[in-house]
Every structure is written in structure tokens, then in C-alpha cells.
Amino acid sequence: MERTNWKSGSWCLAAIAMLFWNTSCSRETGTDTTPADGTSSPRAWTVERDGDSAVLTMGVTTDEGTGDATGWTRYRGPNGSGRAAASPVSPPTRWSETENMKWMTTLPGPGSSSPIVSGDSVFVTCYSGYGVDKQDTGEYSALRRHLLRINREDGSVVWDKTVAAASQEDGYRGFLTEHGYASHTPVTDGERVYAFFGKSGVVAYDLDGNAIWRKNVGNLSSRKHWGSAASPILYKNLLIVNASDESRTLFAFDKMTGEEIWKVESDKLEYSYATPALAVLPDGRQELIVAVPYEVWGFDPGTGVCHWWSVNELGNNVAPSVLVEGDVAYLNGGYPRIGSIAVRAGGSEDTTDTHLLWEGELGSYIPTPVAFEGHLYGVTERGLAYGVDAQTGQAIFEEELPVRGAKAFYASVVLVDKKILAVSRQAGTFVFEAAPGFRQLQLNVIAGDESDFNATPAVAGGAIYLRSNKVLYCIAGVEG
Image (cartoon, rainbow, N blue to C red):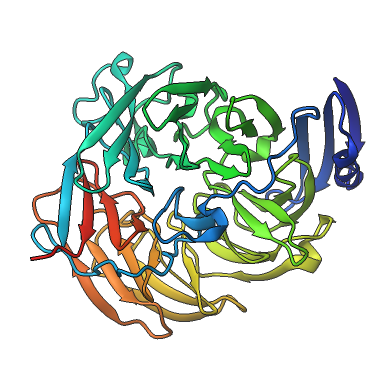
């Protein structure tokens, strides 16, 4: 293990040089004094990389960039865009418990994670045994996480794998009661499915439900004890996990074996609840974009080397995930000042003055927007539907939806056939046009399900997969 200390901006330049190392396990650390709270705070990084193991399988693809109309294999679909690919059969945007409801499957417990779709299967996570009832939380020792494979055609459960809590999770109180213990959406490459269960680790299963590997990513807690929520993503043969709460670490594991390929440690990850995304630079290279309080970072996804960082005013905690269009990343979040920014990827070291495109006052604390035809569309957690010019950050419309409470929306919006689907927690799914000027088209309510709808839906093959804390629904045109 070699160890080198770097100071100030020279750390990033040295880290780039590390790309050429191809032997032994390398480690670099450093500090850089840049704003982290609007004034100043040291940047402290630790990067570890197994140089012998960091050989990526080229040509391996997932729906991260392809937009396969038949699959939705990670949180928010292709590269986290929230956009459904064009399909020969359009999913319905009008439904109820009796209309366009293909099937419904009762789940073994609640969860805020989204379903994913691949081949003939839907995968979804839940939890049971503890924290299911706010009035009677039960015993922590009974906490179980579930990963289910469900038949896409009829909703039958193919298998249900349970994972016992391996470490003491944060107690069921405070803000954690809003989302629970199954908040990370799984991801699949079509041959294996990967789930992140917080302090209970990362697990990999084959499609027959056989456990392949399991990795512990830490047992820390943030000072707020909110649990964690970022979902894992795939890059070539790497599984990338933002274990911000558990260890203030970004991990990259070999998806086949679970071997750690690289990791980045930084205290600035503590309140990053956001799922990263991949940006494609003009020369075709990809960068891993990670949002943390007051900053956004750009990494080489194959090595964990930092290329650049950009400072902003989205502070304290960042929950909405990174949204990328080409080489531009859009970020929301912050508290108490909630806002949005646009940053161009690429560059070197501190790119705040050169690559920060705009900062906007209109943003969301929890849900992530979608980009479509030069605009961003979304809803805030309080129920404000909005449209923003993606070039300038200026609002093109704002419309209050008829919902109650400061946390009316947790789910992020998705785009289906030029329509925005916005799933509220209690008031149903709002459908409005993805166009300048707000026009609501539909409000869909499933009678009889009084539980929270916290999860972003999946859209694939002409169907919408929507989960509540009780039921997984398949919404599709039903013949006859």
C-alpha cells in the first residue's frame, strides 16, 4: 500500500496522474480549502484503489444508456433519467382499482424503494418485523429485509429472499419513520440483481434466488439518524454504492465477485442521500457525478479518481438524485434554502467559475425532476408542480396541487408519452402535460389502499409498476 499526501488543488492533478498506475494497491489522501458551508471548510479525501483489479469489462451494457423499452433496471430507469423509452404499446395514464389494473400483489411489508423490471420479472424490496406500525414498532431483532422476484405477467411471487439485520440500524423514530428500512432501489444487469440494505450491507443474487455475495459497507450513522436512501448503480462490471450514512464512502465492487475495486472516503458524504448518475462528455468519456452538501463532484467511474468539483449553495443535506442530460448535471436540494443548479461536467480541479451554468431558487427537497425538450419538470415535496427552462433555470410555470402537508410527495416524477406522472403519498397520481404552461390531465386514485405511496414508479413494455407500502400494482391496458 503506497500512501501520498497532497494539498490544495494539487490533489486533483495528482489523482488524475494516478490513472496511469497499474500495479499494487494505491492510496492517496489530501486536503483542499474550499467553501463547504458558504464560507470555508477543509475538503478531506481518501481514495483507495486496487490497481490490479481495476480492469473493466468493455462492451458490457445495461439500460443505463440504451433506454430499452422493455426494461427499467435501476432507480428512475435509464441512467436515472425518469424517462420511459418509446414503446409499441403505450401504458395507460388513466387507472383505478378497477380500470387498467392488470394485477396487484400484496407485499410482505412496506418500503420506499422503487420496483425495477427486467425480462419476465419485477424486483422490489420491502422490510418486515420492526418499524412497520408507528404505534407498535416491535423488537429490532425481528427486522428483516426482503428482495422479491415477481412474475411480470401475472404478479405471482417467484421467490422472496430475506436478509436479517446484521448491524444495529437507526431506531424507528423521527424522520426515519417517513421512509423506513427499504429505501434503496435494487439494480439488475439481467443476470443478477443487487440490493443495498444500509448497515446490513449489499447483497447479490442470481435470478434463481441463490445468494452470490454479500458485503458490509459500514455501521456508522449520521448525526441526524435518518438512515440512508441512495440506490446502487451499474457501470460496466462495477456496482457503485453511495454508503454515505454507513461509512461516508463511495464503493465500487466487482459485480461478479463483490471484490472491492475502489473506494472514496470523505466526511462530506454524510448527508448525501442522492443516487449518482453518469455524464457523457463530448469525447465519449463518462464521468460519475456525485452530489453532496454544498458541492458536486466528477469522478472517473472506473478508478474513483476525482477529476473536478464545483461549489454551490445547496447545503446541509441533498436528497434528490443527480439528473444528467449529456454532459450537464442538474441538482436539487439543500436546507433550509432549497434550490437547484446546473453544472457542466468535465474540466479539472475547481470548476465553480467555469462550469456552473446557473443557480435557481425553484427546487425540490426530496423528489427529482425529469428533463424533456429543453425543460425540467417536477413537483416539490409540498405539492408544487413546476416547469423550468433547462438553459437558464427560470421558472416557466408553478402550480399548487390539491394535496395536504409539508411532505405530500416523496416519489420522483417520470415521463411517459409527453406526460408527467407525479405520485403523491396520499392523494393519488397526478398526470400533467410535459409542456410550457401547466395543464392537468388526470388524477388517478386506487381506492382501498390507504397506505403511503413513497416510491417512484417503473415504466416498461407498455405497463406502469407502482408500489405502495402494502401492494405492488401493474397498470396496463386490459383486453376485454
